Image (tube, rainbow over all chains, first blue to last red; front, side, top):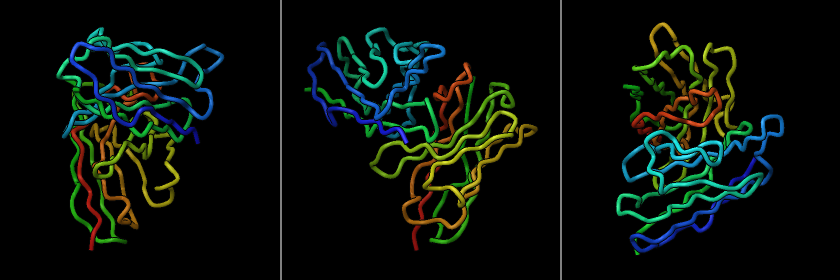
Length: 113
Length: 120
């Protein structure tokens, strides 16, 4: 199984500042035949289901604000919020869909400092 | 609009069975793979199972293999999860989720979830 490890577990950032969440996979999720990283990011607010933010490691889902961006390749990935807004308080999860069993990171709780 | 609505959750004793349903609307259900993902109280997300759009293939997490069965009825636009031999550690909110439009298994639409509590 591919183990996904996020860091940090929690993060407090001031409004308007940059937030960066890291995700590391135990093996590469880059598929060589199409050069795509099978890595997605989700945002989950309390009492709500997760919401897709980013797929293919760096493609923003339709309707997601452009302050959210994803990067990285192979085994190391980042989710960056360029200017934190109050509505971004949530838990963020990375997810590999390279192979079954599909697995998630443990989550990173993002709060306002 | 695209919508997934789970039902069938509740309180069940250890060792008993329960079946969850997920009613889909707003899209052509029969052309999408579908998943179940669960979340224990206060914990992270755990993928449970996937079924191909035509029902021809299924895959499971090791934690539920042999106890849970994912199925679908494309004539009713409905996904199911039959859960047998339930354990306390199966207590969770169960979400149904849609495979992306591209066909790759990231989840572009989620239901609101159904709470399953396994307790005596």
